Amino acid sequence: MEHMNLKEYEAGLDTPLRQATILLLIRGDEVLLAMKKRGFGVGKWNGVGGKPNPGEDIREAAIREAEEEIMITPINMQQVGELNFYFPSAPLENGWNQQVLVFLTTDWTGEPQETEEMKPSWFKISEIPYGDMWDDDVIWMPKVLAGETVKASFMFGENEKMEEHYISS
Image (cartoon, rainbow, N blue to C red):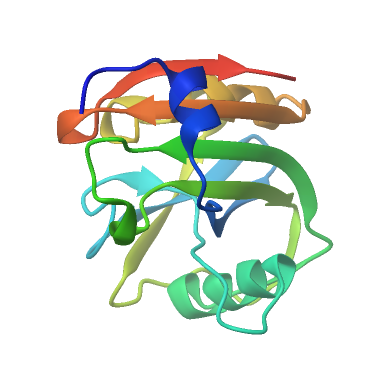
């Protein structure tokens, strides 16, 4: 496929983006991130989340994923982001193109625990390990942690490297 820019690629897609979630837990001046231990994004710090099961809405998915991945139940989640991710070099059937709704919460039950999939850890917001995260995180995460709502699109090339992005709000 010849190289095209992000807006051209976005406009040319005729399949809907896979829906997914990211949840960030906030405790004072800290955010909970989790190291992905297997599957898509292995070896990177991220929020917890994933895709909905059939018949499940996106908020239900965010709650279930938090319960499965770090053993907590979020309460009063606030949607703070809508992020579109595009991977033109990956086959469409891989389902890597996705729209991720980002949620924040300061309220949950249970204590975050390591599971087979995720190893959670608290980080000071001023010391987030962006070098060990997806390239896009340094663009949108500081904004949502500062109280902004973000709508953005990101295009990744080979080796999961971000090639282009834009923020629409």
